[in-house]
Length: 418
Image (cartoon, rainbow, N blue to C red; front, side, top):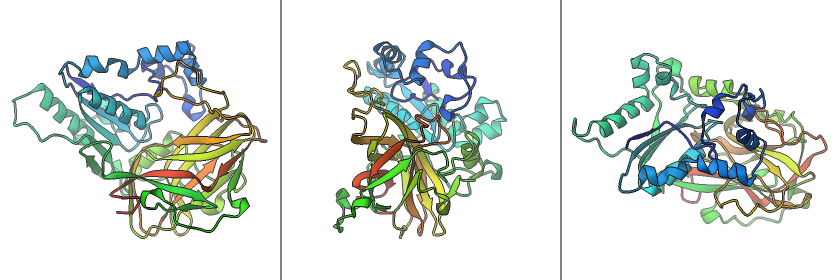
């Protein structure tokens, strides 16, 4: 009856049998290594982008959502604790939040924690058998023990107050596990929370137009023709630093050393940087950012990589979040796909234009006053395998208001700062 969910949903095609992931001799998500021969053919098909009816059916039968009624229905209201890490590339935090919503809607009592770091980083002290002092002093394991006490020892102590629906670790410059640092979590009584509002920064020329009330853009003169489209050429030399795969995100969360780039180093041929006006007051962002682009491609396959930065007055770009989307021209979706199944089709003729959505890693952080929100775009993400490395590839991105960065801003109404 008790379900301790130190698990996460994997994308929207839940891969189910997690042991398959453990048999990888390398990580296909960071573009290195090879798959073990023992990996299931279905799993290989998923990594290759196969969305056949057989593969989709295989995933559905292994989806945690297929067992919601068994877990939560019939008045059981099973308690569930979900733990996930903001930059987890195996089990994406947005999928964990979607799974949280599904469990909650089915009647389970759900607690969720999102931590800084990569896969299993917050869970490692207890999982590796470190000393009780190290494990139990972490907010996660303290929460786990309280969760078990409350649900396995009813009546042994006065019932604790109801836990928050979601606890999100706040990224802080002084964060370091080497300094006996105690992380800070923002608690939300519900999720989605009315305290967090999606705020749009629209691409206009080379700038990001700051959010307006109800996302109504302020009157502005018509843009020049050349400002309506920003052309990107494929090239690995973008000027954006992705850090060292796996290592840099770990060091960032463990030692507070953030991944940084510099505006002056951006290659204007293979990358673009759109910058908002400097913040007059601190801006707190907490949730899953995403970006919507109106784009057209010269080829039928490409990758669009997006990065959100906090840019200092000297042009230093501190990476806040990133994501990439691989896009294929494949025509309409097959009829057996459901509305919530994952899609990478782009139902646009080659050379035509359409919408591309890039979802990024979770974040909970502050953009200081004086810094500016910035969005970087390229056709190459150094932490992923290239979808198309043809040097002739060109992608045009609309920048007259149709494309936008959406940030989950805390304490905002229409995008105002804290």
